[in-house]
Image (tube, rainbow, N blue to C red; front, top):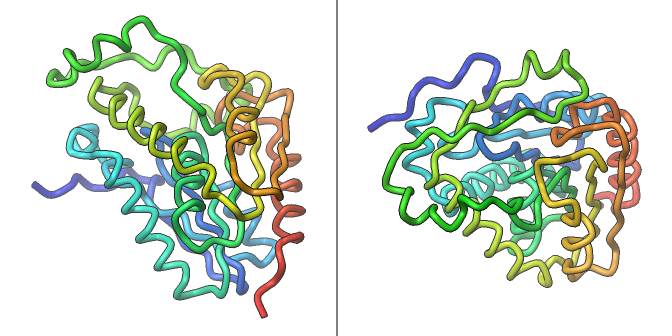
Length: 254
């Protein structure tokens, strides 16, 4: 069965630029569109930017029913190899589940640096979680709940799947476990970003992941006025500036 057409405005994008490439990974049920503002900002500073579409995303929820966590890792690896054809060194960045994938990619592949935005160390506590194995065969539509956006203008233009199925959650849980088991293998410079007002992930996520990363060169940015999608929220310019400072510290390709 072929995948459905990509949702308009949610297409992957490539912006050619300099010798350093930035691989931008969107979040769970999200689309490359949520990486666009960051990508445009990085491109203005001369970086090459690639935002791939993760398997099963940005088309139809039926496509996510066929996805497993290994498919999402494979999407990242495909993007990495494509970006290597345009650039001499690469930095991987990701939002939410994209941050999980970025850390896993940093542990497994040859990147010069890794940046995460709102990456969870676990899923938030939910009494329904124990029933997931029983519910996973059924395509139950589970509501995402109230959004935590502070930039309501961006919320109106945001594109994602409006609900999720139990099986999707189980694949996300598996991905988080794999990532946590490999964090000690992350030896490259790392920057982790999280908002104090992010209610979509456990509040301790940044501190937990930062402590478990194996790199000796790691730093954190806490912002105060944003929700989960921090790169589209009121603190985004502070985030973009910090990301660029992080990139400037990475040794340029020779």
